[in-house]
Every structure is written in structure tokens, then in C-alpha cells.
Image (cartoon, rainbow, N blue to C red; front, side, top):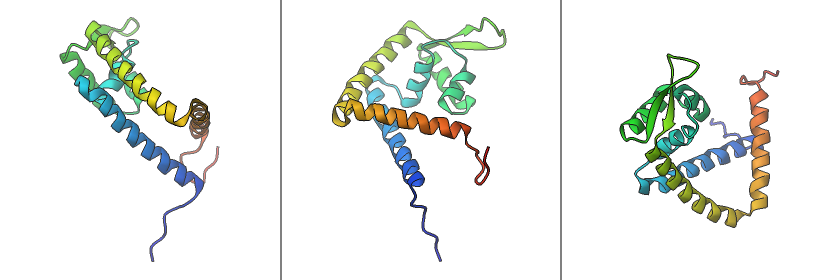
Length: 153
């Protein structure tokens, strides 16, 4: 006998969020590909707008530090990032945009804004704002929820 998959509101919500994430990554790839970039490179460039450590970027993005380091090193080789000394920690470096990196990031943002205006025009600004509020509340709730089923805090 096969158990049927859950069909509750939370499961439908999670599946919708996973599908949305996949679509956003795909759209991001389409936005940056004409500029010779990838979504992963865009994420790192965007975090380096304000100089920060690779470890902090990785936590912020939710990826392993090593994978973010590889992307940052590729961006360094391409002249889009530079490493600077960290003013409070001489063992750590800050990843920062070069002037060329700022140009590329600005071009990406211009393409992203044009794309997002089209999306917002389809769904409406009010509905988008309501979705932002709802997702923020869900994220806050998850931040305080137990990660072990059946356990409460």
C-alpha cells in the first residue's frame, strides 16, 4: 500500500514556494546570461556592493562558503571583484566590487528592473505587497519554529 503525499495547506504552500524559487532562478539566468554572467555570480556581485567577507555572503545566500569562494575567485579573475584587508580582522579579507564590477552589476540591475516592472504590471503592486507581508510573516514564524517535528519551543 502506498501512502498518498500530504495535501494540506502547508505542503501546497511549500510546493508553490519551491516552484517559484525555480522560476526565479530561471528568470535570473535569463536576465544575466546576455551579460556573460550567471545567477550565482549575480548573487555574489550583489553582496559585494558593500564590501563583506565571503563567509558572510555564504550565510546570507544560504550556500556553502566553499561554493561562494569559488564564485568570488572567478569574479576576481575576471576583474569584477577585488579583495581588501578587513579593518578588524587581519586574517580575513573583504570582497568588494571593482569599477568594472559596479558597471556589470548596474547593467544586471537595469535588466532586472525592466523584467520586474513587467511582472508587477501583471500581478499588481497591491498583490505583490500582500505577498511580501505574508512571506515575511512565514519566514519570521519559521525562524522561531522547532526544526524537529512534534517539538515545540
